[in-house]
Image (cartoon, rainbow, N blue to C red; front, side):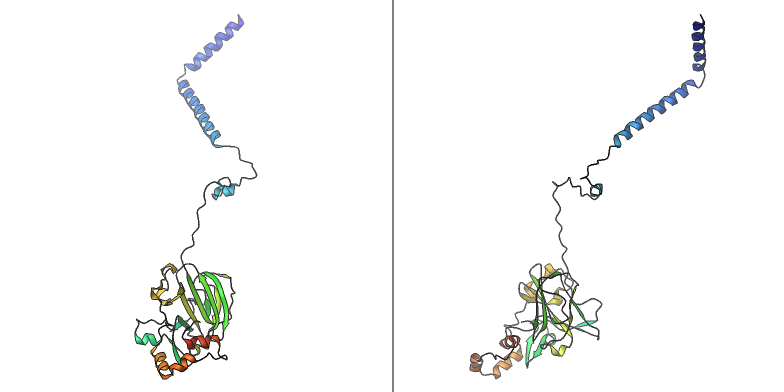
Length: 286
């Protein structure tokens, strides 16, 4: 009897709560909050995964795109940018070009600036001579990146450095001192390879560097390709100086006896460079 009265009192109490005005709105809010909490928990549980504790996996490599597991993906080849031709001196150096590259189509006054006087003869320059305008030492730098293929001391041309580049291009540097490179050494554009010096062949130019560019073995005018890509160098500018002597050479040949020229033997006391110059097989670079 007592239990029935307790059940009847609990039911009466619950009916009083349900009949209150704000009961159902509050119930709806509680249910909505529980549903929202459940949805958020479910989404976050899918995002959070256990970290891969495999010692071979590197998360730093993953961030850099260097995942070691992606070994099957082909790697992209890295191509070197094409360099522009530059003068073999530092940009801050005070210099001037004192000898031009000899060409037949230029004016006579410019041709005279492209002649080198040595041993009572005029020779056509296959490159340019760059001299300092002050007393400061003049560093000589690589005009292009490449590999040093020759370093030698010539009795006529002074110290000589030859650098081989891509695209069948070679650069020559002579009249040098304090050479700082050796054969098979890799150099970058702008690296100091020596300092300007003097040479017997261009003694009247004082301290200077003689600079040549050759494409497929043919000399080209360095000034024509300054600040241009090395791929633009062509042999259209080439001049065969050895087969086209100057007027002075012709006058000298006329004054000499033909038979004696044909039968003359090279002087054993002469240097190889002197013999090549007199034979017409070389100009500014043997």
